[in-house]
Amino acid sequence: MIRKLLIANRGEIAVRIIRACRELGIQMVGVYSTIDKSSLWVRLADESVCIGEPPPGESYLNMDRIIETTQKVGADAIHPGYGFLAENPDFAQRCEEAGITFVGPTSKALRLVGDKVAARQTMQRAGISIIPGMTVVGKKAEDFRQAIAKLGYPVLVKASLGGGGKGMRIVRDEKELDMAVAAGRREAKFAFGDESVYLEKYIEESHHVEFQVLADEFGRVVHLFERECSIQRRYQKVVEETPSPALTDELRREMGEVAKLAIKSAGYTNAGTVEFLLDQEDNFFFLEINARIQVEHPITELTTGIDLVRQQLLIASGERLTLSQEGISPRGHAIETRIYAEDPTSDFLPSPGKIRWLKEPQGPGIRVDSGVYSGYEVTPHYDPILAKLIAWGKTREIARRRIIQALKGYVILGITTSIGFLIDVLEHSQFVAGKTHTNFISKNMKGWRPNDQALTEALIAAAIVSSEAPAATKVLAAQATSPWQELGKWEMGSGGI
Image 1 (cartoon, rainbow, N blue to C red):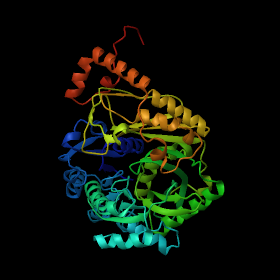
Image 2: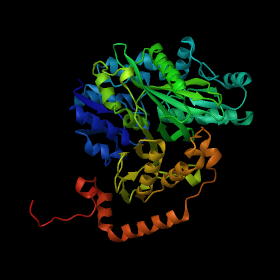
Image 3: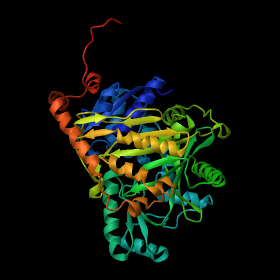
Image 4: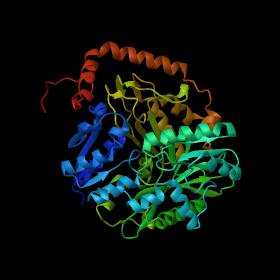
């Protein structure tokens, strides 16, 4: 079993990994940039080490610093979370060479699947249908023009290394191509440390469906069924659910078996997802393999009862999977919404600032994975995700109603968030009907504006908080929070126990 784990990430996923480590009795070390020194995961970890300045290249993407820190604190493993170095084969290889357990696939498997172009080549050789597009990285402008001549518009510019929608741009005509490729390269370089991009045919009115897979080092592979991830802004998911309203039982079985074949073909181990696009005729195409834990993993955990981060750690420790495909039986329906610090009325631009007050929802079937607290400073340096709100219900409609009510009780004051937008997405008639295509937001939510009544209520709440608790706000701004501060107003009682 892993003895001591360094978490090479930040935010809510770092907190999530810490909780799994505690259950397994694994010591954990958090890392942080100078601007993250008062963050929640820094306080929760057994140890925390500063690894550099805010730019990712000087901290969370700095392989030398992370490896050096791991060795210095005596950790025997690294969990990369998602984003940053999670799908970087060079980093996995550096860990292997240093004798550090990388919680994820081997560097060899990562080169096949973490690199999306290499993954497309691997799937082609295995006889799996892929989305039409380039099977090599574009080096010069002529490479992209030759691909366009075969594919036709529209196409997607995609980062070869990494995921989360970073580096993606849709191109609908010739005049947009050069600018989209250049922008995709810049974003990919910043997010993943690699500027490689390629082109893929853009399929209109499709469903984005992914299958969660676990594979151990002894050849056992199981899938934990699918997640519907079609509701996206800027090609990044904002609402996910399981099971997918688009799949029949027969199609689900077929896609699940193809997902396992894809994993076996790559020699993949640990947790990962095989992603597909499903067109209007129910044809499905291999999209990519995300070689890491996914942001949306909690909905699978709620429907299957299987802790995916725990499974990651057990597999990385060399243990056999005790799960069988026949023994995995999802129950009910789960929906996740990603809570971002961004402004949906301004093309989802990030909205950094200080969280003046935070109230997270509770209730039956409700789960919150969060990396923030009242007084937390949301910086402009990283992805603006704050938390994830997840709801489970016996049926899709019960889960939908539960998460809407939870969102309405989710209060974050001081910054602009996506909460109001998410409520309107979930209440939209097309979502209720299960018609959740990848163009849902552009088609149904264009020009969205917040409800005036909700805005008025938020302003009143903000005024009440600012008038009642100025002292608490000052304390939170000056230092990291304690559990007592997070409770809000409290006082000692005089009664006996």
